[in-house]
Length: 329
Image (cartoon, rainbow, N blue to C red; front, top):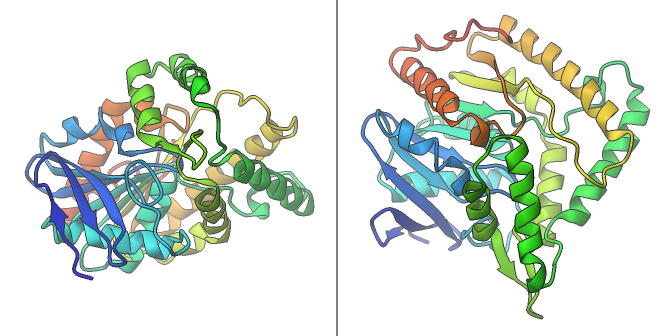
């Protein structure tokens, strides 16, 4: 099916190859194009404080990934390959033949796949703390068999939480919980609430849930568990910036008691493995951001500067490939 963009202006609906509608926000600007991708369970609203800063020197687009925000679900399972084709459709529909793809969390993992698969359209990519749950051997000091069991439990927990319905009367409590967490991190409440409201959908019996739905949430978990990111990092042939969060996330109510120890071991493994990548792979730059995983919401000015500097160097002759020292900090 022909891909198209309708309702030209700030908010667009673009059509994917299988007919799914993809919601896009055009932030304007001129210069090297940048496409912004959010994380799992989030929306393009996460970029609302970053995008205007980037638009001072770039053409800036942000999109809701399939199954999120105001984009459709489609009939096929959620996979990285489908997400890459959705990115291709958006760039084509928006008249942007080439763009640096910048993703946070899940979006960062999609950005890496775009760098591989869209050689003509994506000259460089940025992955902001999009590591998934990794491999058991990345959990420093822990028995891989034990880690494998815990990862299976963590995945089951995430799948059960995804798309969980709640009564409409509970919406204020859901928003209050989200904005309360945001306050701890210095994130404005209205930014967090806007993202929650954009994620809202209704079940057939009138209850609400936050997208993605239950089935899409399971598919997302399967896709993230199945991707070997570090194997892909080692094969990139165009500039890739990987940013790692330097602060631990706040405690999450309801997670098992072993979860914090698991994440501490994984953080150490990521630090080790990313540092090795930066030393040995000429197209990979690794840096740290003094924030939690929610870095896009916590540090919008720093993220905008990081992306703008890297994009300028990576696209204009490659001088930005080692712009951050080629290692972690």
